[in-house]
Amino acid sequence: MNRLLYIVQKEFIQILRNRTLLPLMTVVPIVQMIVLSFAADNEVKNVNIAIVNQNHSMYARQLIEKINAADRFRLVDLPPSAKQADALMQDGSADIILTIPSAFETDFYRNKSAKIQLLVNAINGQQATVGASYLAAIIQSFNNEIRAEAAPQFVVQRVNPVPRINIESSYWYNEELDYKHFMIPGIMGELVTILVMLLTAMNIVREREVGTIEQINVTPIKKWQFILGKMIPFLFIGLMLLTVGLTAGKLLFDVPMRGNLAVVFAYCVVDISAVLGLGLFISNLSDTQQQAMFTTFFFVIIFILMSGLFTPIESMPQWAQYLTIPNPIAHFVNVMRSVLLKGSGFADVAYNFQATAIMAVVFNVMAVWSYRKVN
Amino acid sequence: MQTAIKTESLTKTFGEFTAVNAITFEVKEGEIFGFLGANGAGKTTAIKMLIGLSRPTSGEAKVAGFDVYKEAELIKQNIGYMSQKFSLYEDLTVYQNIRFYGGIYGLKRKQIKEKSAQIIETLGLTEQAHKVVGSLPQGWKQRLAFAISGVHDPKIIFMDEPTGGVDPATRRQFWEMIYQTANNGTTIFVTTHYMDEAEYCNRISIMVDGRIDAMGTPRDLKTQFEAESMDEVFVKLVRGK
Image (tube, rainbow over all chains, first blue to last red; front, top):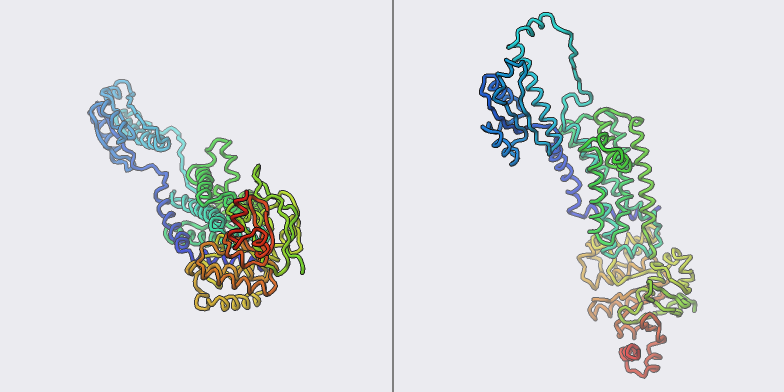
């Protein structure tokens, strides 16, 4: 037992003496949180639109003004021909091309129906669908206005209206739809996991590179003592990171914290235990810090992209959803969001606890197993 | 005199390559036993089998009375090891290194205090005790590493080319330390390829291509090979191949 304490003490001294590690653990997470929460924003703003107006009627002008007034859209150009508009789409300066044909107003009066064309750059699928639906909504409302104006029978109907269904939405757990409140808890979970994993993955392999591991291996120390002695300091680092993150989230972004923070911290302990096991496992299998780093990146990238942080897990294909089960970041992101935003209690996130605890056991058995004192 | 190390046809192969080929020898308690050989002769592999870092392919070996196959962890409690690669933590202070190794060998807090005071005084490191090891000159580092390998008063200390990259004056000092330790009853098992160092040993064995080709006191070997110095013995042995 005492042996364990001496390892823990030694690791702490080494970590605190390392001048690059401390800022890495405090400043970097806050900076990343700030940058990511502003940048990783899925709200579609500033859709660039080019309008080919071949009609020049009053209605066409009104429609253009209405679109131009909407703050989601930026009218980049009014090219005279469809060909020039295509070029704008081609060089990336326009996301949507709206073409108002020359017969627009005439058709509207004569045939009671006018057609306009929307061309949407769908390379970025989300931007395209959301942008197009904003535009459709604007056109729809414009349509209602001019119908009322042009066909008085609708006005008559308004006196004696036909029943209609009105949708009133209310956004729960994030009333103002503040995107940052959604992102920050997830980013915190991600940062804690990645940093801890990277630090541990580099740890044992560094002792191997320097040669001190051999000196350790000729001592009567037990494998579990060695592994546990390496883990405890990093567990503290992880919890400290989470505390820094939560404080910054509260002070800088006023992230709501509706649930019990004890659940978050308890989960963090389980999550870090799992990640530490994986990190040490990687470290044991690597001969150089470079190898350890690249192996860690492989896992980290998959973990992040499949964590539900940026894209919802529910919209992944079924096989990919299964892959998120052994992903500590996915569980962490879910726990953070549920507890902080929804006020979930332990029972609500018990599944995440279970899955992560199983991972912790498996990864740590792998870590102890792969640590060889004898060749 | 008791036997400290005893091997019987100890062998290690890596695939087709036989690094250590059926070596048999015995080291007495309190002896300074020199393990000589050219680079790549198999010295390091042999030492690693004895200290439990490498599992032998075949043969028998007992270290401090314990079997290398079944009782490796018991051996570890009873031996010290100083590798050819410097293996203290450069980012810990002199005192912290002593405390750490003392701690993982299971010494009590009080023992650690006494030991570190003793080591720091013997090496004349009082002023450097709280400086990081990385800032010490190479010779001091080596002597500290040797002192720490004996922090738990082991029965046997294994040294794998301990004086590599050290100037002759420091090497002398180093050997004085080895003599002192051996006088206290500790067995010293040391590999080297400096033939002048071989003269300092009580008994030596010379390894060539994984086999022990000669063994005895330096004087016996010189008579046997009709040589003036150990250097000549060594050259004759290796050339004779």
